[in-house]
Image (cartoon, rainbow, N blue to C red; front, side, top):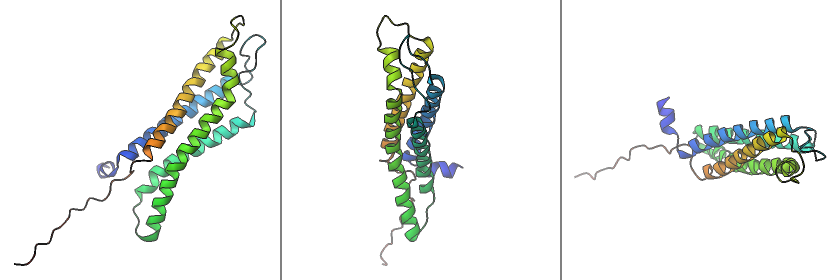
Length: 179
């Protein structure tokens, strides 16, 4: 176990942080969709969100693929194979580490798009309207989820610049010329 941890480079720990923040963001997203579905934001106002809107299924799919890509980008470099298979695995692992932030950014944009009306009516509506306290609570969870998903994307972008596994550090043997 210690050898495994010693073998990990900075990119592995940053990617692990991205996985954790992504999962937290997706949990908060799920809470937002669950609580905000068909909720009135204010008297005579709009609904916070409609969970049957196809965008929410797309956001969930993008978020799940983001987590899968992060995990694969973390696991694939652990296998050190020789030859063409090793080179292909290295490229595939790198591609997964590049795709994860793209999918996280798409998740963030879809999350904002799906909840923008509810956020707007809840926090920026006419002062005379009586705002639903449940909508305010859902709005706070929504904002926290957005922050976590955006933070995940930023962390995943940073992680893609670092190696996941340290290079093999075999001691260099110098040959002395025969005397």
